[in-house]
Image (cartoon, rainbow, N blue to C red; front, side, top):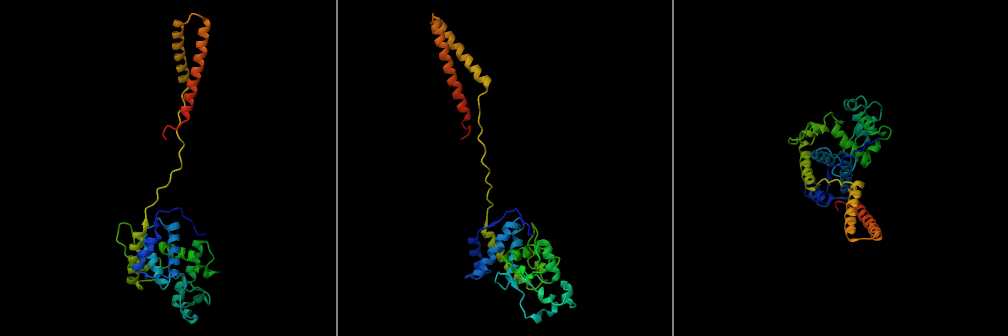
Length: 283
């Protein structure tokens, strides 16, 4: 099963990205298929691989641009059926590709954003992605699957044993020309390097700052007066009032009325203190 990563450390403004790539390397009038293909690749990268070096993405896009004949869509390796006899079991290329059965040369011809080729590579991709690409090799033409093959294959070194991290490392200048060895020796290496430089410039112009995670709402702190403090305030006030009335009053009825008044007054004070304690300390 294709793994899902929670990493979302890089976001790309599509508007700024497409404005930049129209200048180079893509034509000003982008075809719908090119826009769709690039969106798939950016979406999959952001969702699963965004914690990696942005230059890795730039080189993957450059590779896809070259390997798909600029269509930015997963494609079959081109050629008539007879062309793929050179991949058949027993041939030098066929042995290297792990083809073991008659017809494997054509059955496991190149597919995808990067040309996944040969029984051995289809078996490897099947194990890595949890998909049956051996019985259903055309799954490698589905855009999302093809995107994972492109990214994981180049990051993990499926195709030649070389991987992106061998040539593009943090704190060092990207070796875009040499990075072609990740896929196919030095075939068209300088051309693809120029594409990678252009894609890197476009990506850097289009990168959005990572949004600050919105903290969950915090519970407002409240303060409630302690029972002891409330009782202390009650008795102090009651004592003061009682003394004042004792000096002024000569009849017990007056003292009783004063006591009731004190009780009512202090009850109201305690109620107000309690309500104030329920209000937010910091608004």
